[in-house]
Image 1: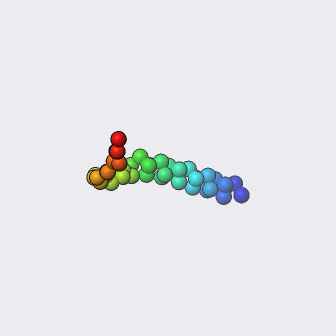
Image 2: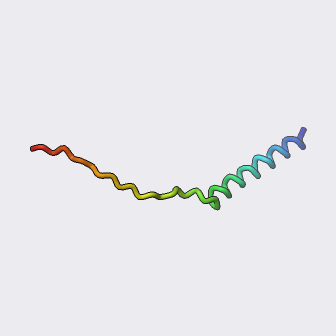
Image 3: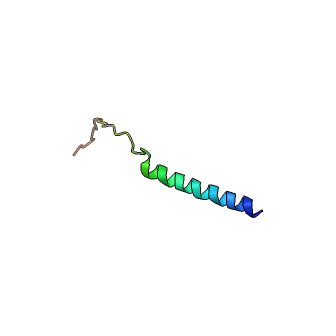
Length: 45
């Protein structure tokens, strides 16, 4: 039983390290696109 718990604990630690490594090293920056759209202002005095 202790072997299974050690194995599960090892998997959890490795999974956490993998997620943290991907967060720091993975390219998760958004693609930037410039958007230009005319805006009509309804300004009647």
